[in-house]
Length: 205
Image (cartoon, rainbow, N blue to C red; front, side, top):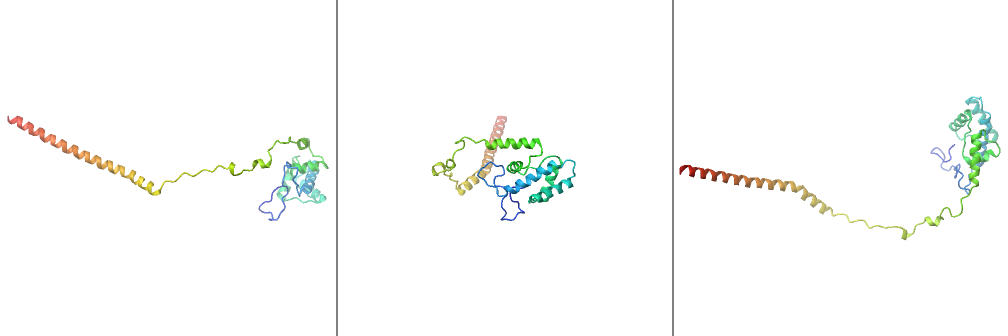
C-alpha cells in the first residue's frame, strides 16, 4: 500500500500518511482510521488462512474489508496481501496502523507481536531535552557565508598569442638547424680545398 501519491493518482489526492514511521508525534495521518481497519482485517484473515488457497484468501480479505467498510487500494496490493497471508505472514501497512489494529485484533503470530511490543516500548522512550539543537541553530546569517573572489581569467588574445608562439618554435628550430648545417658544409668544403692545395704544393716541391 503506497503512502505517497503516485503518477496515476489525481492531483488533489490527500496523502495517506505524512509520517508513516510514526516518529513525529505531532503528525496527523488523515487515513489512520482506514488503515487501522485494513490492518485489523488482514490480521483476522491471516489467522484463518491456514490451508486455504490464494483465491479463497483473496475472497476472505475482500469480504472482511467490506464488513469493516474499507476498500483495498489496488488489485496488485490485494494480491500481495493474500500471498503473504497464504504463507502465514500478515502484510503490515505501517507500524502505526499495526499498533492501532492490534489494540482490537491480536497479531496472528509471535514474530509480529514481538516486533509491535518492541515498537510500543520505543514509543515510550523519550530523548532527553537538548539532544538536538534548536531550529534557530541551523540558520545561517551573512557572517556565516564565505564569499570568494573568482580568479581573473586570462585575456583570450594573450592566450592566442602564446599559442601561436609555441607553434612557431618548431619551425624556428628547424630553420636554425638548416642554417647551422649550411655553415658546417661551407666550412668542411673550405677545409677540403685547403688540404688539396697543400698536398699539391708539397708534391711539386
